[in-house]
Image (tube, rainbow, N blue to C red; front, side, top):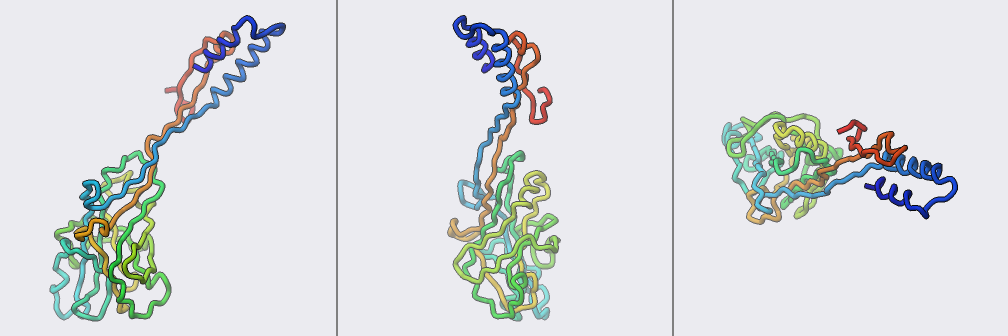
Length: 271
């Protein structure tokens, strides 16, 4: 299109004089070089908040698992399922009523296009009770609640301490917050990128203390919380539909202005 318009200008009788042919050739070559190097990027940016009850989303499964710390009441907590609880407990205390506890959470990612380019993914958890911090805190990583990648399937309504899923022992993120009534954020970008490409590997996350030998704990609102706004949420920023179009003009155009425009991909291969 650009080449056709430019050719019409070049062919106007009043446009050139004297060295018309040489000037036409030089301008055509300049235009051809410009078109050949032209690359157009088009992408649509989007941000999606995955949170049960928001915009009809219902893909968050979560629960906490717990065991008796003294080990004298075997099975009292260990085989109990807390998938319908309105809170997630993360703790390690020397008390039967508040045992060692870990939280698990998973988000259905099917609403995110597989060809999406993930820019940022943040897991947000609202802590409503962070008061049990009585032990020796040690280094920040030892005092922080930590996030781990779960590596095998689990079900919200059957998971318990005895039948808990395996997880990668290397923590993905830490949060040293000790305040109550605040959102805690965990950067999970790298894992979500992988899970978008391989949705069958999406088993979610486990939240626990790295060292479960100190007297401490926290309570987090679960996806069953009556207040939708306080439920766990995963915020994903991404772009989709990014395309690259490169235009090349064949040699005939340099002589006659009648060449064809050939669309290629980003590598210059003819489509």
